[in-house]
Amino acid sequence: MDETATIGTSGQLVEELDGRGPIARPSLHDAIVTRVRDMIIEGELPAGSRIHEGNLGKTLGVSRTPLREALKFLASEGLVELSPGRGAVVRQFTAKDVHDSLVVLADLEGLAGRLACEHASNDEIREVRALHDRMVDLYEKRDRLPYFKLNQSIHSAILRLSKNEVLAYVHGILQARLRRIRYIGNEGPEKWAAAVADHEEIISALEARDADRLSKALTIHMERTWERVRHAI
Image 1 (cartoon, rainbow, N blue to C red):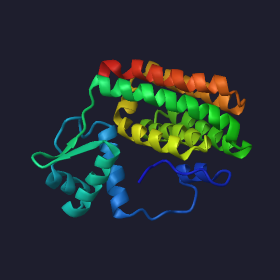
Image 2: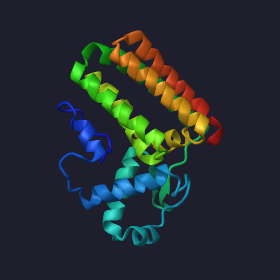
Image 3: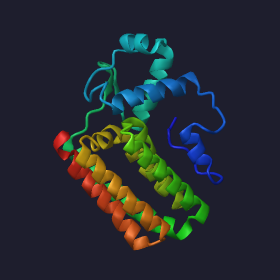
């Protein structure tokens, strides 16, 4: 399960993320995946640590079978590594892994920004603006994890507005792997404020349909992300 939703009719995505739309009944699998993913993102399950299925199952109140299936899914996202000897281990990225991934993400998002300016409808752009405004509200409340998830949803939304499914798919794989790394990029008030300022420029460029400006803003945002996380890896 991915916490990013698909843009549909006007306002639908905002309602889903705000919890005001129709109440969904998530499966046990989805609930476990979300919870364990959040524990990895927030550092409750540290990078490089072995996940003890018995202890984690007790913490979550679930049996080993659905937990193992959830860990397999998180392994497919690149957040967990499975090995016969150690079982499930939270993936630990080297500085080179992170830098190389962010370089590729910068190029992918820069291209997506150009395509989004060309292909997005006015309603779709308004939906992304609504997501951004909601994200800023969470920032002002210092509600960090919901803010982060909405932040990632905005990036995914811009990729979908490119109307290039291959581009969005490849981006999604890299973005999923770097969730924890991107999360620590908001540690500290100055870093967090700088990330929000980057998003303000991104949304303004998208609304103006200025392809060069948006591409540059997205690329620079990824370059600054590296500067924000490099000393924490």
